[in-house]
Image 1 (cartoon, one colour):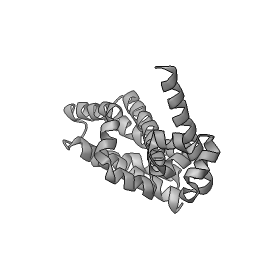
Image 2 (cartoon, rainbow, N blue to C red; image 1 turned 30 degrees about the vertical axis):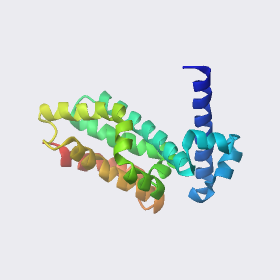
Image 3 (cartoon, one colour; image 1 turned 30 degrees about the horizontal axis):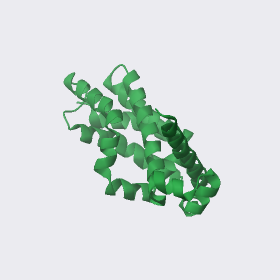
Image 4 (cartoon, helix red, strand yellow; image 1 turned 120 degrees about the horizontal axis):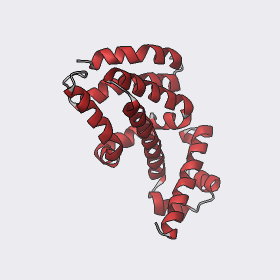
Length: 196
C-alpha cells in the first residue's frame, strides 16, 4: 500500500471515529458535515472526496460496524464443535457485541441504516461476501451432517438472527429487554427453530 493510500485510509478512519463519537453524544441530530469536520479535523472537501455526502459517511460507519459484527459472529461460529453450540455462540456473540458497542449497534439498527440497507442491500451483501461465505459454508456443512434443517442459507440466517436483532433493537430503543435474559432464553429457542 502506498503512503498516499495509507493516508487516505487513516483519514477515513479518523472521520468514522469522530462520527461515531458525535452519534454517541447527540444521535443522528448531531451529525452534520460541519460537526464532523470540527470533530475529526478533516476538511469538508476531503470528507466529500472519501464519502460523497453526509449519508455516505453514515453508511460507511454502519458498514464498518457491520464488518466488525460479522467478523465476530464468524469467529464465534467457527470455534463451535457442533451445530447447536454454533447457534448458541452466534446468538451470544451478537448480544455481547451490542452490549460492548452500544453506539455502533444503535447506528446499525437505526432508521438511517435501515433505509440505506434497503436501498443498497445487494451492494452491501456483495461487499460483505468474504465475511458471509464462511458462515454459509458452516451452515451447509451442518445441514449435510443432518444437524440443521434443510432450509436455504438465507432462511437459516433469518431464523437465527431475526430474534436477536429484534431483542437488541428493543434493548437499544425501548429498554424493556434485559440482555442477560435474552442470552439465557434465545439460544435454545432459536436452536429449536433451525435444528433438523
